[in-house]
Image 1: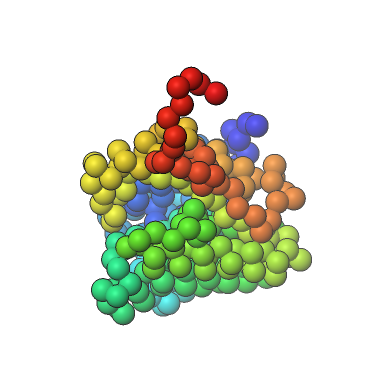
Image 2 (image 1 turned 90 degrees about the vertical axis):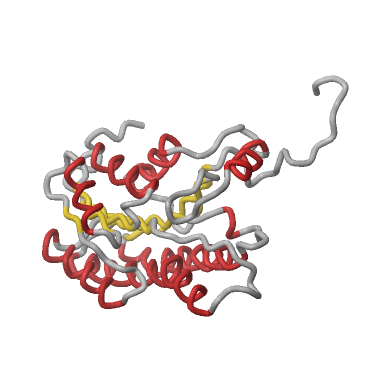
Length: 262
């Protein structure tokens, strides 16, 4: 499956573009011929990323995804620059590590705003642009295996990703008549970011439990995102593609030692 120049002339909006996966997704789609709109809170970081990309027609638009006016301004900026986009990647997310009983209401609201409400606002806004122009396209929501399994001290994050999973399916059902596909991509465990810092002990322990024995990289996520957004997936909507090294099917944390290999 060759994606070289597959997205030539396509416009791709990527949220959380200053982060690890967001930066990698921007580079991946630019390399496949797309023009990209990178968005995050830090305009300086976005400008630096844009300068690294060899992607004519690309733009950088700073936006706070907890702010409805900021998101409306983002949608309007893309509309002025390109008209309707072809692809939206809802990548931005935050991962607060707190017990539910300790969590401040303001922290809950911010997490739900970024992880769940923002994808809704952006899909709704960009879908209206696309429908008005008769443009078919694809939305890809970056989900998580946390949508199916609760995690102690991360229950709020799990709830936000479960909500995003249902939103993905609901939007897929509603937008199918307009030729807009909506899917979720679930990366596996990665070693955290500047937003969600993890100890090396935690990283090592989780990695040992993954069946394929390593963390998730952009070499795993990039091709999966390209597939879901591409014409190769033209009959795929409302589904979730899990790319996690087998972590969601079971764990190596607890097992019985065997005297001989099976």
